[in-house]
Image: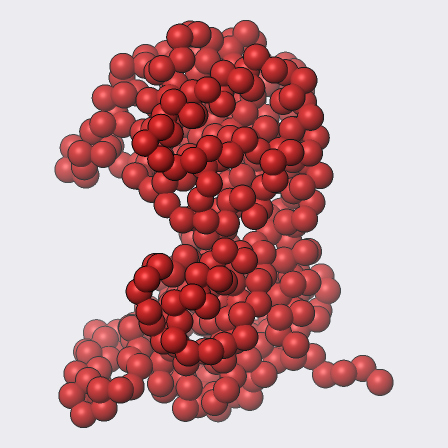
Length: 395
């Protein structure tokens, strides 16, 4: 006799739609779970999300997930939310408040449903009392960030899904309430990064960026922000005398004068100083990223913060790129010493990055072995694996 499927409700943060037509890390991972459920049908799934025209169209094409689509909240709903929170804060100070009108409307639309688990995907980690009252003992939290160390907090969640062992341990160390914490590693669409790029296409892409076959290309993928470490990487490239060592930067940034921060100014200055040794590409859709990854020789992920579970190194491994990474958060957990050189985040990081880059440039045999190890390692982090872990965590 078949057991009934677990009824699970995923509540998006409410800023971007699911399916993920506008990007967003959490929304993209939620979309992966939905797509895998279409294939394997192991959950009775409901998704509560905002929407746009395209995501609404895609949602209608999915047969094994029910979507509760929340329109943009009205002025009245936002005003009601603020007034209610002022009242609760004044007369019921121990209650955990809803952070936005989106959650108020979401609860209104699902409170009469019966679920085995209701999962906040991101959002308020402390919980919301109104949800706790409607779904007692069934509120779960999907932890996509690294809790701040040495800052105790509490949560009403009865179960926590952590995107890495690292963030799960950080949660347990800092959360004053007790929950079941289960690691559910993130996953990527392997087929996007295993696509073939032949020698002629690789040469054409390099040429379009001002690079040649003789150049040793380092690629950086990520937003231009302090936490991502792009300035340290630029400084490391500038310290390498060999002019054939060059950098490809793939990532979004607003370099407009009104948005210039001292950090962005420093990045722009360093890029200008390096001249044709740096090519800035800007935003590249995820399904086109493989073309640039496979035109590079190595990837550097110089994170300067405790990155919870970055997918950038997994994508690089799936594309067969050797890695240089910092010892940060969940990065070590997703990679391995066989496919990644690990450098410390200390006062010598620029010199460490320079040495690691030059070492790999001079050792093509090692690069080849790291490439093969990375391809094998990446198989642990496919979407199917993530979905299986998620289903198991819901039992």
